[in-house]
Length: 334
Ligand code: CP
Image (cartoon, rainbow, N blue to C red; front, top):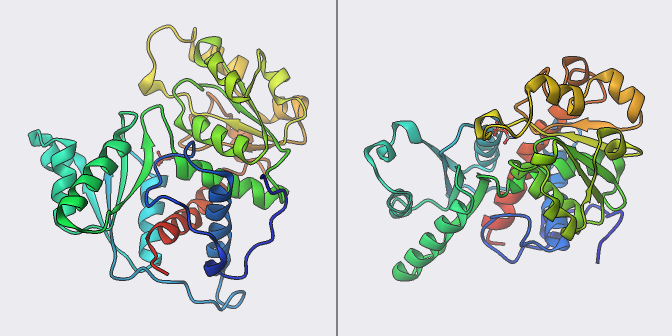
């Protein structure tokens, strides 16, 4: 059942724990599990307010340790995972892949087994290959069985073109804060859907919680198969953003482009980029979101990115509370 307007529980103890010890994607989750992460994140966000507003101590995962393993660059996801873990009292290690034994040819499996032997409780992984976090989870589950140990949690920080689950959770927390609900919201994802793990995770989360999802972009970048999941595929930007609550502009992933998917960056900006004037003309009621990093002047103009219509920095702020919630719900033993 989709819940429309949830009461925030009084404490984290009242938030139901998800069924899994990993967060590999949004697709395998049920609606109540997504709500658990959002509710816990909202509670953590309250606790992060200045002490005068909420004199509640932050719960602790002290004694536990987290390793971040990023095979692709990141600013927001990595720093907010590390900040979240530190706020919970965890020990944090970052493996700089470019400076690790990976460059001597060590496989992902051996890297993970080595880190497991050092006793980490949680692995945050970003990888260019879709499915890499599933592989890591399997390796850890098999090794933990052999050693009779607890299975460490694997947290997907973005895998190829597949999923970026904590991004979807922080996006939904941002929408929930603004609108007080998720059910019935209309959200248009604009741009490079094909390469976007953000759009895929966002789509699953929004559909499971009863929102309407629309996709629009160059036809070569909007796979029609998404219609089968309940997404409305639109041909033009005006059709997609008509009457929406949120315009979600996606980063044009220039590093993942194959030749010929769109004529030119200028053409892309003209047809699918947004500036403040276009927003006022097509959907003056809508808020604008973007996962970052932005290509200013391509998918989003600076006048829009820096306007009060944009919630992009709120999304970043919410990343810390969401990642605290994820760590707490997956790792705490109460
Ligand atoms: N949104 C996001 O994943 O940003 P980073 O690549 O900076 O982590």
